[in-house]
Length: 230
Image 1 (cartoon, rainbow, N blue to C red):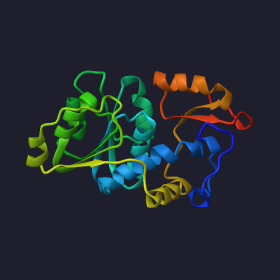
Image 2 (image 1 turned 30 degrees about the horizontal axis):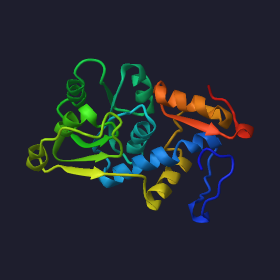
Image 3 (image 1 turned 120 degrees about the vertical axis):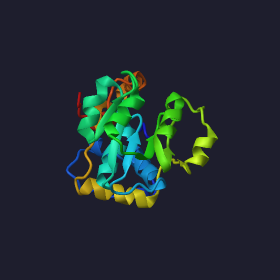
């Protein structure tokens, strides 16, 4: 139903948002940012804690950076060199480049002797083992995606000897959505909108999505409401 000009939903799922943002900008929040907020809820992220975020240039990853700041946590990010400046602009305290040398060493250098309290991961794959190892004792790992591969290498001794917590997370709660709306209306979040497409160019939108050359979100709109952002 998302790729349609008209749709029907229960009235309980419709919320009024008091914001000057455009419809396209508001559309960037519901799925990605709600997913991120629920991840942080699952891991009980608190003010002052340090959170390491993978896939930080994507919709959920970029949302996690801003959502950490909204609750007073300190986000650190992992991304590629060509997207580093954009990730920093979202509010990352520091950025490790996964395509430029030893990214784990870069994280440790950024931390300057401090520890990672929570890993918020949407990438998994080969990164998983190092992400787990970077957690402090009694640290928490939360995931809502596995873009680099769902099958990972895990030494269970690391989990039980360090008393780690691993949380799976999907979508979000009504309470998290209400909090998200509050962040939007209070100006704590900005829309990370990369481009919009008319519904008639749906195939081009999907092609660009698969190419992964963007930062943030791509939004498809009914043709009569389409306003280009590119």
